[in-house]
Length: 92
Image (cartoon, rainbow, N blue to C red; front, side, top):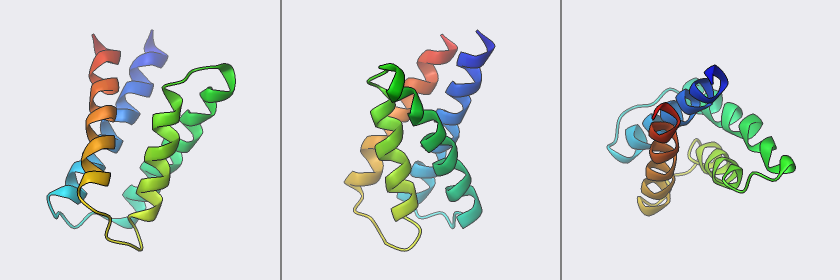
């Protein structure tokens, strides 16, 4: 039960990173790499058959790409809401 809450917290932290990028906050590169790395590690659950871990993998790639490039707003909103939903459900 505690593990689910920890994984949900990772989702919420990554969703916050996406939302900060959307609204033009100056996000530290270290925070983006930290969230993307955690999401990438979390996405390894896809090997056990968890299909929702594909969202983590795509989100990690988008966070890594957002460091050198300005991504379109749509590519930031969609993973933000998916991760926000996953994070909120893990606490319910």
